Image (cartoon, rainbow, N blue to C red; front, side, top):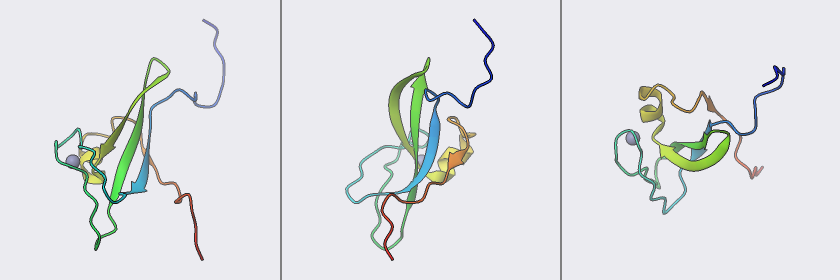
Length: 87
Ligand SMILES: [Zn+2]
């Protein structure tokens, strides 16, 4: 094993904040409830890409509050701008 100073590896768990899409049916691993779309409230969810041993393993969807309560298990939430931006 060599010591290399490098930016964070690609194969690392990370979490982003995204709006909940309509028809979303993911279950929050923290509270076991659905991360539900709500038409009137623009709900956000935390999507975590989970890597095990540097390999992508799965995606987990959390309620933002649950993710914080769980102690940010996959790192601090990165707030990305939405992919499409309209003016
Ligand atoms: Zn939850």
